[in-house]
Amino acid sequence: MWVILFIVSVPLALGLVPPNRLYGFRIPSTLANAETWRRGNIFAGWVFIAGAFIGGGITHYFPQVAETWGSYCSWASYFCVQVSRFCM
Image 1 (cartoon, rainbow, N blue to C red):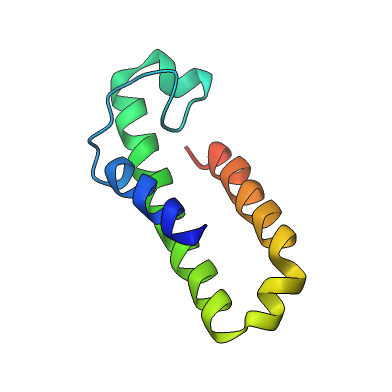
Image 2 (tube, rainbow, N blue to C red):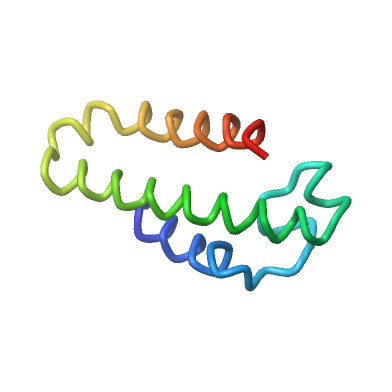
């Protein structure tokens, strides 16, 4: 799961994803302005990449935690995304 998160985050972090309604950090303010879309997706991409490395590290070094807390980690990632909406 963390590898997939990393793979889909790289194009966002590099600013390669044009404004669309299918892939990217889609909130009303990013969809309304191309520059906000670019900045928001670059920020979100780096946050997701960091999350992928943190999640991968936890899974690798603490497999018992990953088994027990896997769903909580998913919710934590979702929470980070929601909080990042207010950082822009």
